[in-house]
Image (tube, rainbow, N blue to C red; front, side):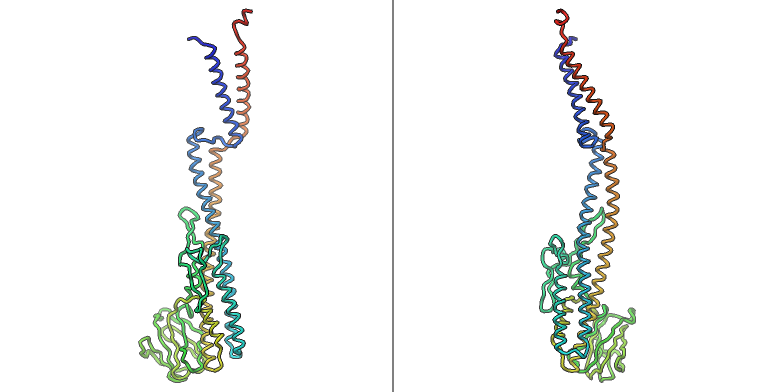
Length: 398
């Protein structure tokens, strides 16, 4: 085989190109601090790194979701804390108004304060997060959920509860609908409610109401009907007399697992309706209280009617306080779940990053040594090529 000068040159150039390519690869490794940047450089490790990177990206997205949910829940908890403060202030005003020494002027002034609290509660129910979304709107987060009406407030949202995924197979609700928080509040003591008939002419006022025996309470409505100031019948819903009894001021009437304390003097024909608790809007409760205070009273009978109305609204406010406390407890549980998951995901991400680094990370000291060797080899090859190019038979013949 005849070795030509052109063949020799092409071999030299091929070797030099190979050396330069290796040098460029090492330089790229050092600049990126990665042992490879393309799958072709290490197909097996590259496949593993791709899988781990996907897992890392998914975990980081879950963290983003968790952070968003955490922010929304903290915003909701803060709003409900303020709601509880306003409800307690309203309850204090109701207790102040439920005093026979208060004049109609006093009651009107208290009604004005109650109306201001009503406005504050409405603003809190329309709280938005940092993105301008209404946190109590359910799925309908872009529409103001509550607007005042003659009977309280109209709810314009829905009952949806948005679920956010914070881990594989784990979701958390990032809020609560305004319907659940402000509308679905039980009346009375949460089991049953007692209401004085509006045509009562006596001075009897409802006091404490309790369930004495949950096993005996069947949830059926009944009426306490006074046949005289000292005697009463308990009538079932169909009007039949279930039992009778005697009454004295401050005594407790017990029937069907319930206990109802009354004070004052009823008139013959006065009655009190006992019904299972139903859902009522917080804003309806507030509006009923404001309306009663604005109406005022100037008679003994009117004072008893006002006291019964105020007492009923105090019971309803207590239920609203219980409701917001329950929701806040649920929020606390969800926030704890998020905090726990963020801690778990932080550990997982450290492990994933460590694994990726182990597969793709560069041994910097080794790479520098390789770079020096490649530079030396390339320099020697270039010098050898230059000397070879200078050789010629004619030089020896001269």
